[in-house]
Amino acid sequence: MTTPSTTQEAVAPSALPGVSYGRLTTFADSRGSFSEIWRASAFGPLDVAAAGLPDARFVQANLSRSAKGVLRGLHYHRRQLDYWTVISGKAFVALVDVRPVTADPHARAVVETRLLEAGENVTIPTGVAHGFLAIEPLELLYLVTNEYDGSDELGFAWDDPAVGVPWPEVEGTTDGRPILSGRDSSNPTLVELVASLRD
Image 1 (cartoon, one colour):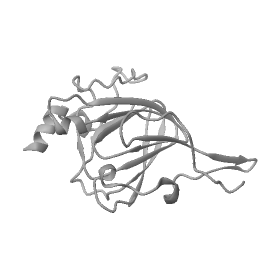
Image 2 (image 1 turned 30 degrees about the vertical axis):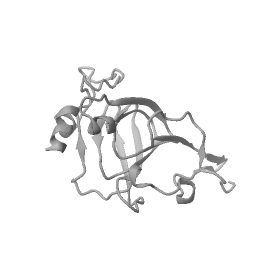
Image 3 (image 1 turned 90 degrees about the vertical axis):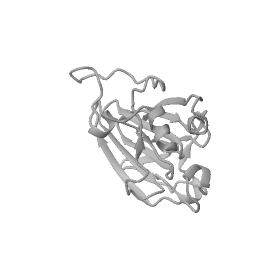
């Protein structure tokens, strides 16, 4: 295998400020393959607006495994940037830019969705809520700029009609609905979350 000179291939850009998508460059031969997941010099510095904290850097890496039909989200951070890479499987990713809503409660959140497959990634800045539905068994590696402590783990309802994420139908569950955690099944609406943050 040769030494990679770049870690990413170009993909269609995001309409949301601070969000970017990429595809890993993979080098393969008869022995297997090599993909560089992340390189600091290629990623560049993280600014305060994107990461929510001054002098932000990636401080924790997590591996999430989800069965087909599992939906995780919609989660929201004020002090954390996420960098997700799909290791295996397919994820329907939903991003909801709530920055307009937190500035003006009468504004509407902006929704962007994309299907990510193995080797594809997305950078999610603070202020952009995020969730994914495992279209097939999924392994998702994510780097974050804040160690988990629970104080910035916010969220709102995945099916909030005022937000209107166009989730695909879930095949293989008894009622056609996604498989949710207790937390994600009881999250408030976006309007209720924003109101609680103002109080």
